[in-house]
Image (cartoon, helix red, strand yellow):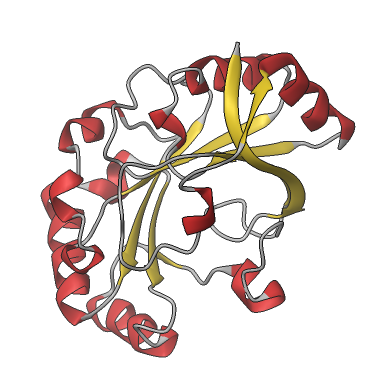
Length: 213
């Protein structure tokens, strides 16, 4: 059993509820979406086919507690489901970063699924698979990348419509890099007293978003 891998590396988690924690990242190759703000376009193609056993050995070599499976869009590769299960079976605390455009129902319930709801200004809002919301649990997280005030208002509507703050562990509002000022988004959240977590991408602050971090 193989997966196409762009990179496996050890760094600090840059976002989500485990931000700042040392984490092994497994970046799978390929994505069916083309969000206008994508910062991992290098993962769209290429990569290397790697046996699942070799992936597990590489992860174990770091002796981590946390593992994040990301992309690209990891669920675009069917064998990602088995990878997630084996990582959980190995005792790691596992998260999955997914666009929300593909079905999450088959993923191991031990995985914390960080599901992105695409906003209108992402240019991929029509790809949202809203059925995924039915599968979310308190172990999961929802992320909105906010590109404008219109995006913020749209995200606020979805937050209320789907009662997201009571459905998942964390609702994350993140400013799109160099499109919305962080202070501006923070002010909007405070003014509306939203039950969400404001987040910045730590890896962009520390390493200017260089690959391998």
